[in-house]
Length: 214
Image 1: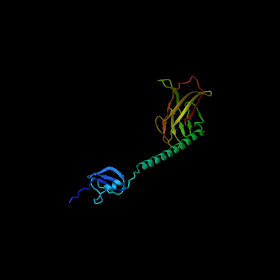
Image 2: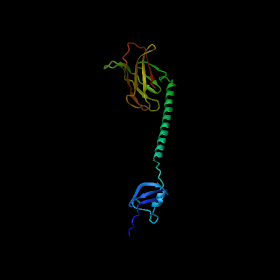
Image 3: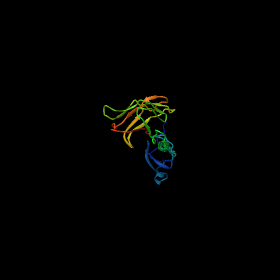
Image 4: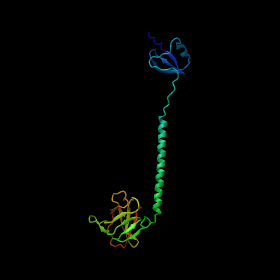
């Protein structure tokens, strides 16, 4: 036999009272034990279970930790970023320091005097004889033909070097040379160096130097 629902009224629910409209719970609450509640409350009826099943005791609130977890993730990422930046700064500082204090012949701070067409060597990069300074026929800028280098540095390494034409102590033209798109020259490999300049062939020069650009 189906039990009839309790009449409408205020019923205790945890530490407050909630209004039962006779068929379902409403969203109206008020403090437990108010005088009006004592007059309306029907002790002979069981507390309503219609509308939505629930316990009338105070339900523990499930705390969401999503915000905290997001903060933790961002904190870890921030620490990793700071650590990575610190390491990059240290490495960059070491490389700058090495470049500043690099005094080997042909290095950034100690140009090597060379003679057109003659072989020379810069720290294990061995340049072959037979190269010439010329003018690009399309735009009259400087170029170097047939400059070949063999890497005997004991490891794969990059090449980026600068050749200067001087008249006395004055630099009258500059030519930059690199590997022509190759990241590193493998140990024991010979390539033709790619050289380019925005300068024209000067009317006169009496000295050629070469040095690593960095």
